[in-house]
Image (cartoon, rainbow, N blue to C red; front, side, top):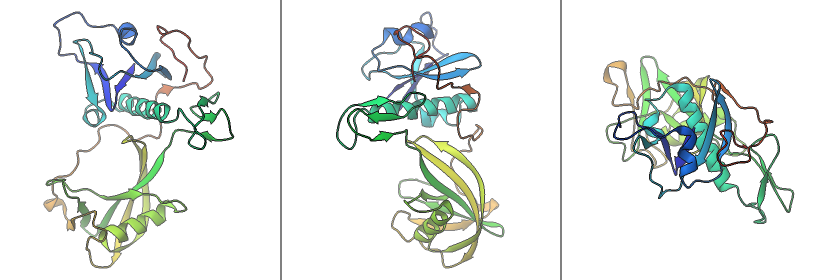
Length: 267
């Protein structure tokens, strides 16, 4: 079961032994929460997601954990399920009313989509594409720095604009942020990034021309590094990249649940 209080995930704290552990089957039933959503099964176990009231007190053997904290410490598949749940809950909370006329939205059978009860509008959980690119020049690679990052540097990244291809986005973001031209773009892989609902698409590119200089005011430093001179960088992910929670069997046509105590809920 995956439960959320805003951006926090509720999970068992195995370090606490002050009282008997709360059973997962009864945890949500004893807490004030929003609608339950059935995500599917993982290793035969139903996965349920819901938002818990912020003022509710979790049992002693449970605690809230942010997705950032889970990022490098949780099993890959389980982390992907947690991010999947987070995005579905966010979608349910922000799609209650039609953005066109304000009428209530209802679920579309067989998926996560919703439709307006008055007009023709329908919507689906947003997935916003963004690029991230490793720019290299021989043994050098380009890293950027934003105000407030401390000593940490990262790769150039940015959101895809309407009417723009992923490749065009790479060229534009690199020009806007670093003032240079690149070529030899190579797609690497993609990764869900639930902060709140991006899909990061990774590329490599080779430096072509231009003088490095931050252009758009968003960055305060862009420079070349080698293996020997690398600065502090974000921690490497320890979970495999995949476009959906691998191992999660989520049959969208499954029967919807009806009672608050049921393990399996409607999606």
